[in-house]
Image (cartoon, rainbow, N blue to C red; front, side, top):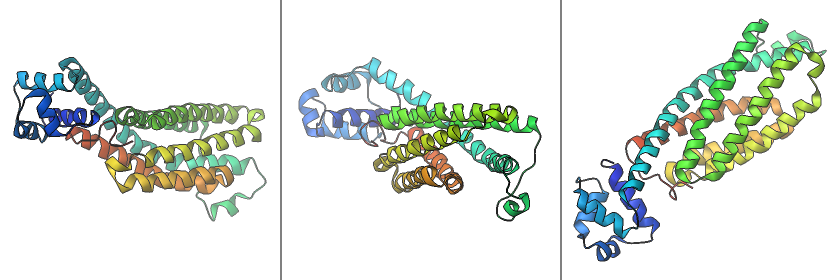
Length: 275
């Protein structure tokens, strides 16, 4: 593990033990100035010094190496995630009008009435299938970023809800495709159940995002509040919820990008500081 990641990790281990730098000095007999310079990333300490400090913190080199490998894996996942978020957002601009077109065709509402307020998109069955599959793939890759953020920061709620959202979205996409070809499956009950599930999960997802505020700042509070609003709208008025959700997605891939940047720079955003 290199600086500044090494210094940040030692600082995190010390704080997790509830020790001040002076108290750590008493345990390992390394000067306060040396510990300060290591934690701020000013120097690359000798291996003996690192082992001495880690022993005082009841940790070891293997654990430190494991943490470093985990950070690199999280960083790779997040870089893919925020790119997938952009793709998911763009695809959503196509998917929304497609779904609206399906609803209008299957109802008695005149198409020209809807077109005055919402753009209609006419499409072939093959295009619809491709868009839906790409939406699911990009969504899964996007949400994997939040699973990793949850694991990295100790925000278990974020990881659990992200996994659950992937499952519900997968079911929703499969249902959309099946009901597209088998209209007898296009039941109102299933659609309502999906909307209610997504609404409840969006509220919990928003709460989990707010828990990231101490590490990433106000954007997490703002994004979390919007997600909670989206969840409430999904429960009572889904069309508006879908529109506002696009704003939430934009802010969410900003969160993923900022987190990946912070990890790459070795910033202190590890367990206990974000959750």
